[in-house]
Length: 246
Image (tube, rainbow, N blue to C red; front, side, top):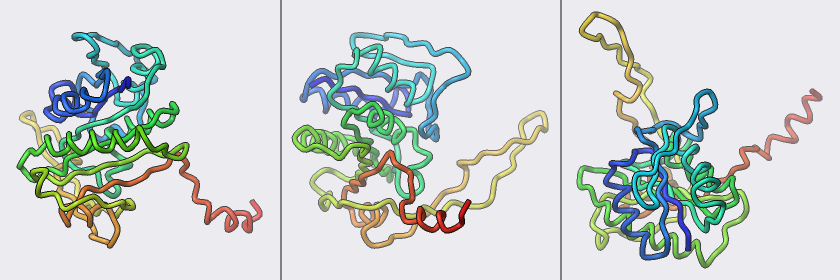
């Protein structure tokens, strides 16, 4: 197998190192990641400035762009479109509920899916224990299943792993995207010269533990596997809009 790995945490992340080491047993691994952290980049693509693809060592590259840029350049330029799977991660922190829409990690898997390649994102729901090896083992397991079983077209996976030793994880749950609750206060801070700035990630988010959701699974010490779709259409509202006679 020829596997492309990307992330949104950059070249120096521990999760990337563990993922590359774990997945290497499955075939030839190519790594193309942002040179700087791109958390919150979602599925953004760089259009207004040039991109640089820099080779660090064999099969390892950095790009001055987003995870989406990395996957596109990795598939087309580095691997010459001969890619069997795209894996994005291991992210330092969960991507649950509404986080999914903001996540650069998920955005990397989404781009792989758009290019017609079996893809998934994997994140470690950090609780301060750094059990990246557990997430690495789960990534190998998911990749093995994805190799044997085809996903529907336009579908990719979002995998979240509890921050626990592998033997203490309580199984795997197939989940839906839950509801994340974000704070509505934006902290206002001042720099040494008196200028005002804002830090959107300063407030912690919470979430509802709805039965069957990704957040409930993690709370129950289970791996959450959520199928996501490239198709954003709300089919249930099509007939409603048609009645508007726009």
